[in-house]
Image (cartoon, rainbow, N blue to C red; front, side, top):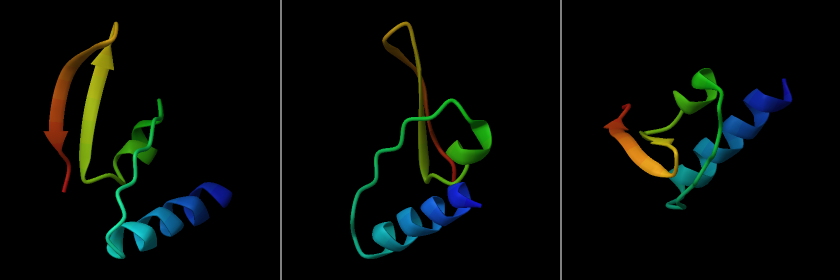
Length: 51
């Protein structure tokens, strides 16, 4: 799917040393990240390392 292709592109860019900032409401997409920051009402609720 297009979503998987985009995530693969982000992975390649990150491997090259680029920082990727991704904003999503989709849990399965967020799990591709190395770090997930949960924000509620404009404040950081949780900051976690995923991998």
